[in-house]
Length: 414
Image (cartoon, rainbow, N blue to C red; front, side, top):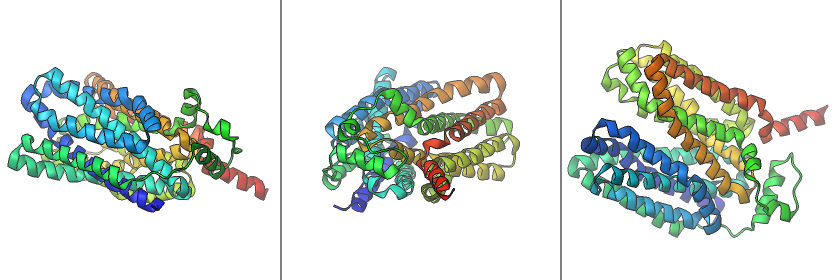
């Protein structure tokens, strides 16, 4: 099977998982509110995020020792079980347990899919962000499609029908991966050597050293810019989804029917722009493009404070999605450049751990700032977070292989 065919099957499986998640994400708040009330939405969302945080590292270990393909099948099948049973369990502790393992299975799917994707893009090093951004578009398209499926099934059969449909889609994804995705039989030694040779800037290491496990601090230093971006995006995403609608209705007087469109507008910006900026990152440098996107995105977040007209606000939200959300696949592509292939699963585990930690920390901290100092202060701290990332990425510009190549070319010309 060709590499392009393998990547295409990964895209299709990502779409199926996004479709299943989209159904669940659209209906779970309504399901929880209907049984427990609004006060339970926050704690049960935390239970889901805790599952992501708790299983990020174990999932990466499983992907490495069982194989990412086999682990992906297990996580997709397990997600189908936990997601499908959600409307049939009762009591806050039982629902919290299901939501915890739902998050655990989700992070397992992300890590295994990303590990397979980076391994397949090893032969497409100059096209890596283009491919990771296409993966993100397929996944996000599944989320959008899932919300449509949720509305249709909920209208005709309610959650009793919708969640089994979601489970069936996830199970179909597991079956699809088992049948159609085949992992090339390459040794970790050869993969590691190829990585070092392609990246340039570092001498190829002897086989024994390439195959050795990197220490956690060394691995974290290698991917420091990517994990900072992942944390910032998780923090921003979780905080904005909850508090931006409240801020716009209370402080800006924007009608509720206009506010409910914001998540879709944000996703639309990401869907339309992710691949073009991914191609730019492959050409000009991943960290350079990430710095530009962060700078542009933080201006849009400040626009939430300055703007009042709902049309201008919709435009700002679209551009925020086109910049800040589009950064995530580029950060993932950078992980594939700066660590050897046999470390992909561990690196992806750490990457997703930081992303989930941002999701976990964003709502309580932003909520406290919102309550204590108001909506503008809450948005300004999000702006400060992205500014800190832009400065960090500028200070560590040498982490980008494109930067090292540019310096080498300048030295050669001199």
